Image (tube, rainbow, N blue to C red; front, side, top):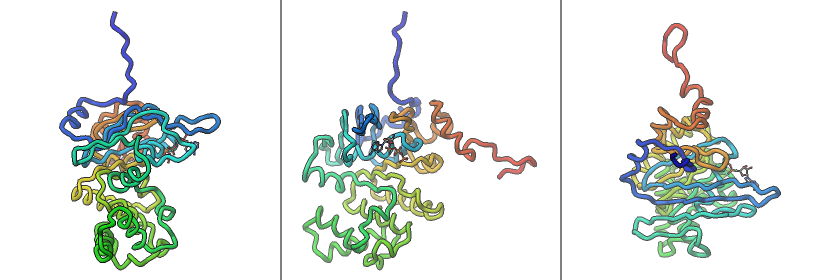
Length: 298
Ligand SMILES: Nc1ncnc2c1ncn2[C@@H]1O[C@H](COP(=O)(O)OP(=O)(O)OP(=O)(O)O)[C@@H](O)[C@H]1O
């Protein structure tokens, strides 16, 4: 009689194993569980193991409340009470060959790690930008803290360069957040996240509030920047069609667990988990029949 097998990890294909075989990890999470200590407690993330590879875009999909943001905050040590990392390990594999135990970081080491190695772009740029200081002051602040050896002229030039990189005219450096469009504000947030050339950017619904045309423009630039600088991205959204377009791999999360992890192509063409198929099915244009009654394709 054969022993019963239990599979607790996410479903993945052989194609996925082949895809990741030659890749180098940059951020690894192992058995991460995160709880909100409320009454009754909410176990928002359960036993999540995940490897982000150097330079890849990893999409994190799943319906509202499944734990995507909580996991993202956990990876970057941004959890605030009542959230607590119950168990698990997070390791950063630096390009210089060193390894950082992210869970053990505190004080200056944690602050340095956050913008320098792993940065984050949050949803809702208006709330993330400080309304009472200029764009320049906010970008400069990151450089003042983390690159104290730069001269004032060098900081100004770097801030201008950052805006150019994200497609915002450097004349906007002296603007305030309320003077910018939603798209520009989100571009400024991306510029800020790129200021120290981090190896990982975690983006939590970075373009959800924007109209589709602006969203596309920003994503196009993000892809070009990723190619140019080689940072890896964890891109979180409930918008699965968008993830299929931009991600190398996609992790599908449900009720705190990753249920399927595969290449974007496999997710699109051969999703294994019933829940992934349900998610795909909730976007009719993905799986639906495009032809009209007269046979003409849409
Ligand atoms: N401060 C909190 N106190 C208690 N429970 C919380 C708190 N914040 C989040 N939760 C719960 O944790 C779970 C995961 O929430 P989380 O925000 O991570 O999900 P999400 O997938 O990012 O959702 P969305 O796509 O809507 O942002 C949900 O059940 C949510 O209700």
